Image (cartoon, rainbow over all chains, first blue to last red; front, side, top):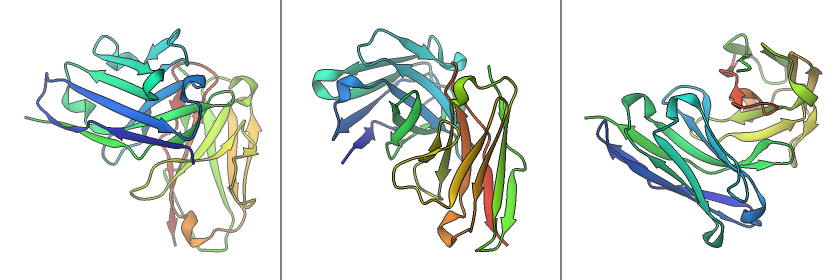
Length: 118
Length: 108
């Protein structure tokens, strides 16, 4: 079964840092581009960042550029999101999602909640 | 940025009825690289449709997608109780990938 499992969420103060992880299983992780997508409480979905299968291409949504860093370790079947200088508006459930076919997101992990509050 | 607008924000139907959801883009979506996702309360998003009209594996045939260019539609032919959820469209033709704000299907 193809599965993605996120971890690392929690409560952090404004200006703080957090590192999210996402483990993939049931598929050849190193062959797929991966993404982070977030969803603020009661709101819609927002793409955050993408990384290509071999780390060659990395993209960010404008509001997180310079603060978030996406990375992966294919030997560990793992995707990461280092989040620095966190703001209240970064509060959200963060999902990792595999980029499949020509670019749709499937599957998605169960999400990990990040709360930025003093 | 290609902004996707889903309207209306909420639709109310009875089980068994036909539902049509709209997604409109500010720029043409190249190669119809548009997907639809379903999100039930407390659950993770689930892929329904990709390429504007191709059902994902395991998705019932009561779900269908259509459209091209800037106007896309998701149709649910006969609503089942489990279909009352939030539906999002997404374009993956250009960065930044963008989602519509979602349409919630409510039980009338």
